[in-house]
Image (cartoon, rainbow, N blue to C red; front, side):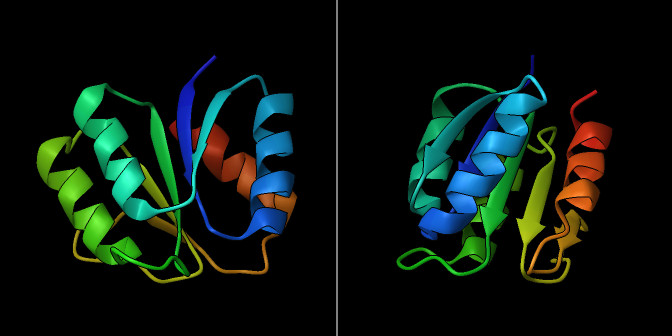
Length: 109
């Protein structure tokens, strides 16, 4: 079981991705705001961070920058936007759930 943060303010995305990740056997913590994801990473280590591109408050790109600065070893999967300066993986939305599962599996092994 891998520890994953799922960060999105979209309740439909949270509901569908949370179920997929749990069915794959992962421990998933959900947060609505990128700032909360950053706070969680500052407290402990995770195996994967999944960040939606449509948050409010701290931008997803700024959150990725902070997370990669304080915990560069944690992979970040970005939903709905292209790669940033850290070259983490990105998945376009709407998501193909099978592609999403394969990508998560490749990071969470």
